[in-house]
Length: 169
Ligand SMILES: CC(C)(COP(=O)(O)OP(=O)(O)OC[C@H]1O[C@@H](n2cnc3c(N)ncnc32)[C@H](O)[C@@H]1OP(=O)(O)O)[C@@H](O)C(=O)NCCC(=O)NCCS
View 1: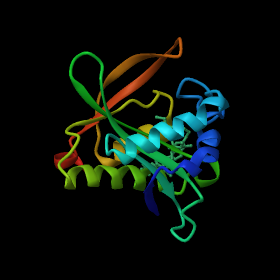
View 2: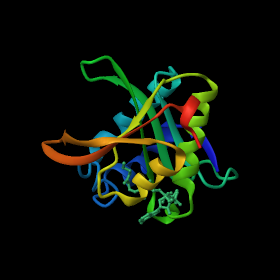
View 3: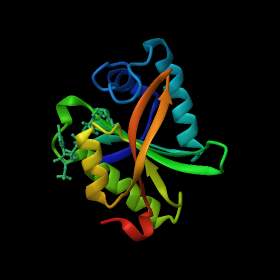
View 4: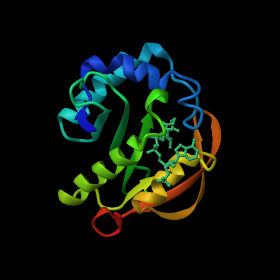
């Protein structure tokens, strides 16, 4: 497995991940296709400026253009100071092979090694067994169930957090 920064050529992978009702079932539903080229452009800029880590998961390093999924680590301010958050997706044909878990662990190892991002939070939907399993097995601690409103819908999510310097297993 390889992680590489997002590239402008990744629009098709974004469309498959973010405009698909199954992939987005726990993430607010599919996004409109029209916005994807702009979204990729903004993400390439953010990653290039090192404001966020926006990594594409590549299963076979020999074909880095074939995207298996993505892991993103970013910081946002919800009014109570900056919060670091991590999110992930793996495309259906690559699911169930341990790639999501390895990719999340690799990004958190980089955060630990660079002493960056502080405590990192994740908010998988309560019913997303695989994402909650990823949190549990890389060393996140369960905090509480949190209601999140996204695109006008209310979701039940589990808030997990990890201090990569101390908790990574
Ligand atoms: C959730 C997702 C990222 C998992 O990626 P993946 O590469 O298939 O997961 P892995 O193979 O690394 O498995 C991770 C863990 O989940 C478990 N798992 C995998 N698929 C599962 C399933 N369908 N049901 C229950 N557990 C599952 C694995 O056994 C493993 O647990 P372990 O660490 O205890 O052994 C992927 O299914 C996905 O992108 N789904 C759609 C989008 C999404 O839900 N994104 C996350 C929103 S928070």
